[in-house]
Length: 445
Image (cartoon, rainbow, N blue to C red; front, side, top):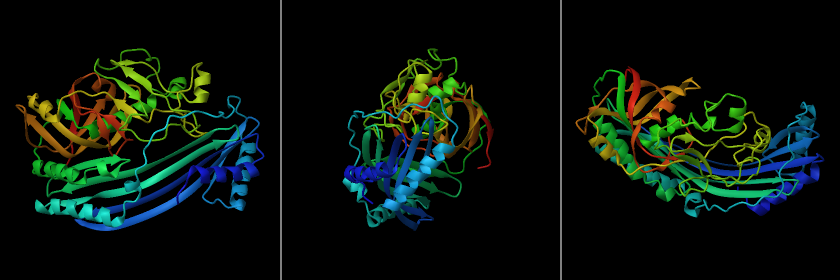
């Protein structure tokens, strides 16, 4: 279902017609999404869906609540407005509740690609066919997904706020399986033409072939080269701590550490929705313009991000990183960009006497929230490096590692790139060479 700004405004006019609340907000979203899934070297699933949602938040006195529907006829809009008002009246008063923001000015971002929105099952199947041929060439088994779609979101309120954004989405992920090994690669982008599925398939195949008959290496602390996906999935556990409410409630690992040098000199991080490799809307869940925010500079924690209510509590300005209200989380930076370096993975390998190359991580869990110690396992391509060369595959490890310590031990970095993993949201991050990364035990595979 196509959602234009005009159509979204028409739906909101119905919301205003039936809401008698003191203030009214509506988030109107539409999604078209299709996916081709393959495994055992055959396509076994193709699905397509489209939907539209209308989420209405009302304010009655100092009380607020939200109700949603997926219908836009007059009766359904009236019912969702009445539900939101009824729920609001049942809430306890919130003395910190702010009035909804008024009209805002947003910087335009162009993230809609017609060819991605129009990508059809036949085109996806042809791509998957080439990937399967690549697997069969070396006796491997391929599995993965190729998806594409488009989203549109409008956010409006009774105080004059009017925000609208549309963009396309696409993803290609592939795992190549051998008898004793596996390899993996993934990419996401608003522009499906930049996914390069055949390149990803070849990368995954080479990892599966190169890690056959993996050998055991003793657990311990090693120099490790983390490919971007591995970096991303670790960092995903850190950046929810860069929210003002988490600091205010003393549940962030940065509590008492703002302004301190927590990481190495070479760590520089910002939140930047306008970066050309990023995705997302230029406004947050409250309709505030997203700002570029320097989070870490030369290892020093400079600041965190703020939603409107948190900013008022902490006597500062909002940065446009809030989630739709009501919520328990406050805010978080969701467009992470970390500065990288110039070293290729090959150069990192050649400069390493003894160490490990890690493709990605999985099943990551937090052990110590203040020191940000995480545990998890390597997967789909773990290799032993000796005398500057990748020698062979190794059995996967379980790790126990502080992300804070890791970011103090980064010796080399590659160019920052748009990266997707399986445990976190997409970021722009580099590959890293890190000393003293702690592997605690071997796995059985």
